[in-house]
Image (tube, rainbow, N blue to C red; front, side, top):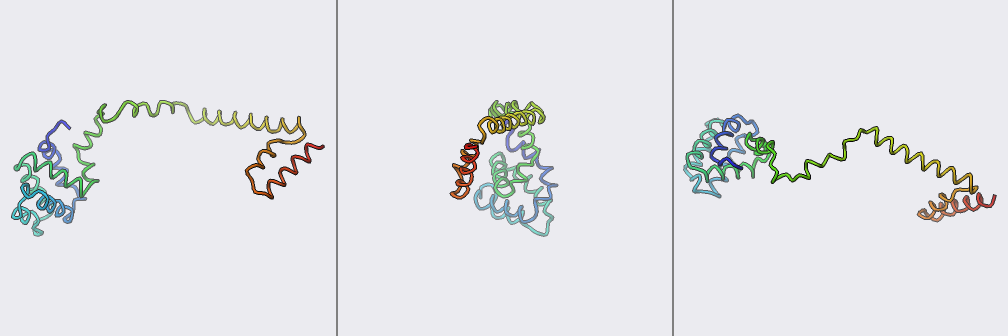
Length: 180
């Protein structure tokens, strides 16, 4: 990733403080995650302080981010893990994640990803023209065979995959047309 989690949290802090998707319930989930799973990051006393519902959510979140940055790199990493676990859509819309996604990393994205659309440089009219030629050739073949042999063998072949009654009708039609 290049940047440390501490630097990323500094950069993402303004976005997180103003993000409306981080409501009181989600902030509480993140605080509880940090408290229960990683008590060295957020003690019970600190968690109680940050879960105070009398303080607006944006202020509590701002204080939490400042506190985590003061705790160090490990605390910032655990915050990102909790954010990813509980609010994935916010996690992927963080400025540092968007920057990381926008910067092309040849290790993360192999060269086949760039070449995916190489075959698609023709216009839709090209494909429509090819399809029209193929249909035209099939029609000429189908109707040309009917004039030469007096009947269509294609109908006899088509009867192979049908039910008994339909097969009998198609085979009868082809045999009758061949006898003429």
